[in-house]
Length: 349
Ligand code: G3I
Image (cartoon, rainbow, N blue to C red):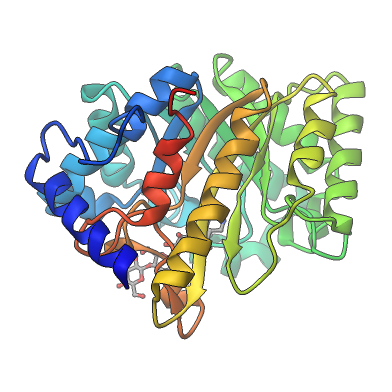
């Protein structure tokens, strides 16, 4: 409890000096994550909740003060941008891009293909579409979305979670109807739609020794050998302190960067079984710090993005009953030990 109380004092000072955001005990650490990003050359980002961005000024301010990279958490997903066939809603996605430009933030596009958050017209209509129709619907989607933001997105998650935990191709409508060739098609289309963007395959559990890592490695190797424009691998980095830390993560990252690819930590968060205790927060801080350290120590790691920077708007409680507190800042936007543990990585030796 002592640590927590001390942090409350420190973080009160932090909140009071919100403009400059200089915590009292920072020492030689950078004063914000943006400053750390600038110092290390690794972009530091957050997923952005479009509704919160529009409605919550404190959320917006802290986002813009702390991060130099953003990912729309949901706003670019198919169900949101094309809720009815041919009827588009770009409001959330556009607002995030506008805010990013105003605040000097680069953008990760998420995501051109997933098996979740697909519009009903697509999932319900799918049995009636021929394979050729489905392929052309998917191609059009890539040009609709990547084309709209052409030149404005640093990196796209072109395909998301296409491998099962057990190591097979994920059994999605894309795989069932189009076969494994859809992955190469996606990268080729994305490159045509936005030749400037770095194109990524993105997945969870790639930090661990799983069959999924090997399959992803084989997919990537095959794509490169076939001259398909793939540039990076995204390690989502969804961790929980009730599980061990994936100590093999640096080797996994290196396996991919040895292929000449860039990599990023794209969705970092560290959840815990509630209630929160000082001990759990200390463990959480080491997990976050290890994730960022892995990125900092690999010269081809370009970005470290957290999946929602505050517990005020965070996906974990809605998906894992009894779990939460996964973000760097709590619901009151007070930074946790994990935040200071990240800043400490930029401390002068
Ligand atoms: O937009 C509707 C709203 O109209 C409705 O009132 C409300 C009621 O539940 O739901 C809203 O949609 C929710 C949506 O987030 C937007 O907030 C969905 O129910 C909810 O399922 C959805 O969750 C998102 C989840 O992906 C979907 O599987 C999370 O916010 C988002 O953080 C999460 O992100 C994924 C990444 O894209 C891929 N990697 C894993 C990561 C975590 O699951």
